Image 1 (cartoon, rainbow, N blue to C red):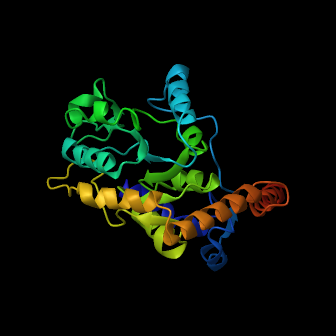
Image 2: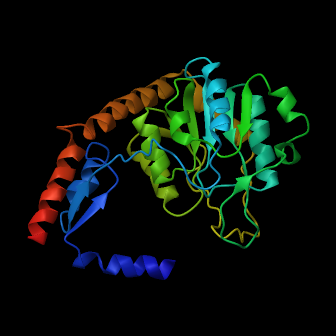
Image 3: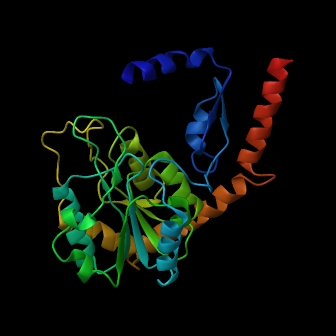
Length: 286
């Protein structure tokens, strides 16, 4: 995978342009700094018709949305770590303790890791209680819901969701910003640490549970760091709090929501960039 990545990087100089899933208002300085080859920011590209491995049946998705319908506005913290994200039992139990102690309403996408040492996608648990602290489901039944695969766009767009604990994959970042949901960062793989740093330190659009956490993509970690319940609880409380710091982040998230929506509409920056890309393709073909 590393070799393929570097081979692609070395060929960038041969390209005449690069399409990027971002928008000018989100990352103006990097886009201004990269002029050769030409960069076409055409995002945020949000998939409103979600699918893929492990997706829910219509009835399962309906059950999730119905549960959200019954929750107060901006009261639910949503935990989801992407199509490749999963944790071992020790970490799962720390997250569960943190959620219960925080007292906040939650929707938690919890999935079984692939076989150790193999690259694979997480799968849904047949019995999720086997990995949770004894009695957790019963004790949190009135405020929380543990699910398998999550219809992420549908969840993030729901008014009941007030915060997102995320692995900071780029699609998840853009989806969260598109709907104005503040993020608490917990990166796992690849470029996610960089995305988390950008959100928290550069853009002020999120807060940190962790920014430097790393989990081996192949599942070969011998000594995986366990983030303790106290640290996770603290991050969730900060994310869902009503204090001044949180209000600033929420205001910035709402402002970026407006900008990201406008970018894709006629007259918006990404709309114009896509038009320019089409013109350049036609020009190069002819």
